[in-house]
Image (cartoon, rainbow, N blue to C red):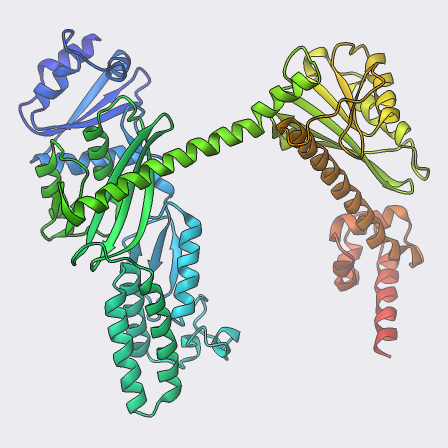
Length: 605
């Protein structure tokens, strides 16, 4: 404990507030709240206190702390939530990546609102629904909304005529004044009700509008409302009734070696309309009550909707305080309940089961990913009888068409995963015009390993080809003094692996992860080489038309290509624009312009 901390401990007040712990660099490492700051902060520095390893590690790094006095414990809780969200201290339990959760935003501040995805909540008069942990689910929700309701999706409101969206009944064309604000606002009200999960109210409103339209002989509007009503009812049938009535959030929590997961079921008007899962970090050494309390604080501090009832798997020490805070946030009574029996208890158990299943699925996914990466690397090392696992592998492939535009690719895998930042591609010079894969392989391996230091060498070099390509590569690699790095050749068919000095290939088991890894490496090298080869061929073909322009040689042809990038842009360029390029002249620019103008005249005739 530093002298500064000792002095500040003596001056702590007997009032509620927030304390902020800092390390030697002034960085905030923990934020907490207290009813009595003096008692709570001093507990951290009591030698006889039985602290957890996490708290002991944190206290050892505390070089200074600050306190902020508040008028009540609820105010302290609000300030604590905001400071944790802002600073994300290392030793606080926190939602993983909670700053990036997406929301659905309905722009009510606009005359004709839109529905869109955002990751920022602003005080701009819009309504926000969320947060969601799966951005794919948000996109799907928006697509569903636009099928059900003809919302405008464009930003412009000054169009001269309706676009295609209007003609296919996907928009009411407010940009051209074809719908009045009152009718559009009524639809937006239905959209908000739908996003809240109140499909029964939406059904009732749509049915009333449909009947009114039919009575007024507006059968086209009545038919559209009928189709919307059918779609909403179809969705509503998929929602299970789980409780009697009202709005609820049902929270379940589970732990595993993977971490802590909290599952939230959203019940609106007695129907379960959705769910989200959240992962928490920093709660491994905390008890369940502390983790769940931290989740409730952080989640409802950023949630745009707080229900009247929240069901918990167990009671919390700060439950009364949380109720006061949530009631203040909602401006209406909120209850936190821990049901012991009945339907409510059943759905809490369901939420806990879903949280546990998510963790099990993630653990299985990690095991599968490990088997496909590090496990496959170790397996390949055993099959090839290498002295160590090939953590870094470099694979080469040659690509050409009858010797023209010959290129080579080098792809890199580290730990069984592509490392694209280390990929390289080579334009082969030694075999231009005549196909010779062996000579091409000598050139590319010479350029890569000819002057390489031992520390720059990979654990395994893979040559895409048979014994001939392998021999060509070995001649260069061993000649450069790299005697220990293993080099193998991968046959084009059956993935037979030829090794140095062996007459028979190594045949990997058909369904082994090692074989799948080798196939991925070979396919990636082939893809990278083909992509580069196509780029060069396309570039050559696109500039070849300029060969027919008098006064345009290889240098000026290349200048035009470098400046414009495509033949289309060259055709569209003016004489002055081409002449302004360094290396071009006015006569040569005029010649290019006249050439394409003459071609255009011939096409028009």
